Image (cartoon, rainbow over all chains, first blue to last red):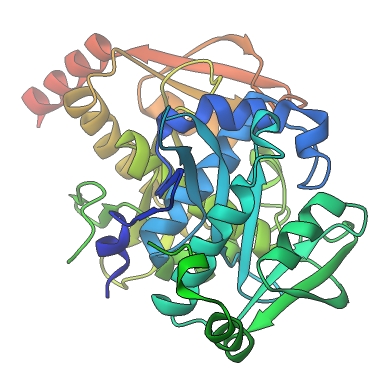
Length: 193
Length: 187
């Protein structure tokens, strides 16, 4: 499948829509990166001008490689909640399922709900055999999300520039671990509509 | 299905088209040439250059314009990026240029910039063309002069470029059209 034909990808869960980022998402994205709490573990706060450059990496990567993180929207309101999905920048230590959410979207299970859909899409549609999450050792909420997605801590890792000085642990799961967990789970609990 | 992010422009010696993944190695090599890129933010590790390439494609996808990749027709080589550029907070609608060292001094920057200014004026409807040029970058100022732009004073750029002392060069779209008409008559 060509990269361009994936630009229309939309995933739907009970409460959420995951779709390719568009410029209209930028305002809320910039708010997230301006928030000390939200940006601490994802490279630090950014002013709007550098945040705009960073934002555009996602539609660019979607265009050239056919995947990147999705924008996560609340179905009921259309509100942009955050980013979630496959991400593999140059030199990255694996196939990441990454995530970052606006502070007003925390604590409501949105990351796990979006993460299940994105994880399944990466295994099923991209055919990835292994997924990782690079998480700051101090970022407990993010570790909990990784755990609830079925990943476990593998140990410390290093990131390429511009994040070479950021301490991270690599969390992850293999395709066979994912398949085994899926088998053990009753269909009614699955959330990959 | 091909991605029609934007047009392909053709000049006598060059092809200009939106960047693709295949441009990455040459793009990263350009941004690793420390002395050569000192006026445009400095050297970038390949992993950082990849992000800038993605952002440029993202600008094309989101806004319908950004810098073009410049291909030398005779060799098929990627020789740089030239064209419209207006990131968030930028002081105007820029046409900019960065060519690899080996492609400099042959009139390529003027040739490529001319084609992209034509496109920006005709298709984007830009009414003013600016170039933000580091104070010490005489080669780039010479290109701006040959394009008919004039020094318009000091200017400050948004982060991450805010530390650099920069000059604004500019011309209006009307000036551009008038000088293009004059060239056609002379030719």
